Image (tube, helix red, strand yellow):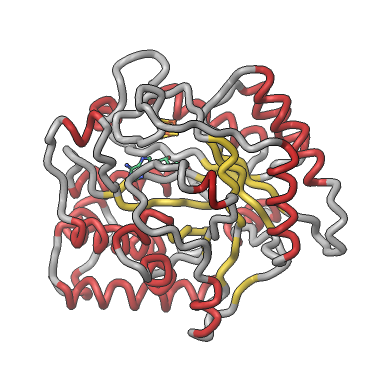
Length: 351
Ligand code: 5AD
Ligand code: SF4
């Protein structure tokens, strides 16, 4: 396939995803980078990622911290979270992401509310104060409202796959793991006023090029102001890996990861697209390559090292805390000291 033949409808996207021609993929990534710079500029926004706990009530079949897996669990204390958020403030990251396994018990919900209020009251000497994104799974609408009122303004909740049949295959078949419930949560977040980000895994067992094309069209249809997608990385002890279901090679999952970023940038030129950590598992410069393929957000992991190693969603071989310096060395401007909201979201607010 030639780059000039690319169309952004379902058929065209699926053909681009299926095409393994290196020259095509390179032309696509270059064009996506050009579109990004022309639309939102070359700046990369940072979010300091704090993984608050690897305790999770869910049992997703692909995940290394699922309830059914035996691993060492941890939960950062409030003081530890605040000290970590201070690091983000001191490094002028502009915003933090509080991510963790899903928990809906009242003690956890209240703890997050207290943390949000405490982080919002930091005196960073900067305007605006530290922005806060949450990534804590499905919660009731009331809880989402409580956290929004306490100061969170963005929320990440991946759909994982926009194909309900594939969603079913990678999750246990029970009410806790429901595609419709996930979708409802995304619409709740949006209605409450969050910038509701979503995303999917790329290169999973059973996933077709058409499924991935549909994921991109789902992001467009949902009008997501931010998207985080990353390659699927098998964790050896999960049911999905143990089942032996085949999935694409590491090399292919990596090139698919970059290609999905590039295609999404063409489809939604002014949104925030994250270069996910999962890219870095497959290539030491994975996140940088994500940026060069059209992504504009990096989430340097600032979780204390002892706990970071336990937040083992997939088999983490490398733990690269931040490649901010690498990006700077390349001459890519870094957006310090501001929230880095997506231009897409702000444009809509002005309408
Ligand atoms: N490979 C890649 N990504 C994974 N996640 C969970 N397990 C894996 C895996 N094995 C991703 C999911 C989830 C996010 C926190 O981590 O997409 O939304
Ligand atoms: Fe829990 Fe998220 Fe892992 Fe599912 S993917 S088991 S919700 S941490």
